[in-house]
Image (cartoon, rainbow, N blue to C red; front, top):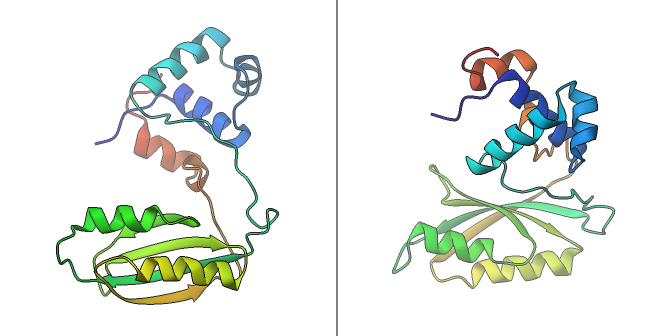
Length: 168
């Protein structure tokens, strides 16, 4: 079971997700929570591993990475485990996500590429991994939703239901 969060924790986390790495005074202003409370709660959230890191979100298309592709990968597990093959897939430059899945395929790989030549390079590297027997690649025509932030994908009531134990 996940960690229980207070409503103040949720306010602080949502503020960070929406605004990135901002200072404590700005978080206090936006959440109406005291600076000292925010400092204490952020420290606890980091210690328990809930906050991994603070990162900048870059626009891939603005950087020229116009192609997003999803590749389904079938493998035979000769001398490699799923974890070993997954790590090899994840180490390919341009691969953003690797999922080991149950079903008709073994892995789903999501990648971004600058152009067709760059995409062919990634696919060639996937096929070079020992155990990969077949792939099927789908090009993304339009991105409807691509969201890395967690809490923005839930409404406030669902957040309270899922993550808040006791009320303040």
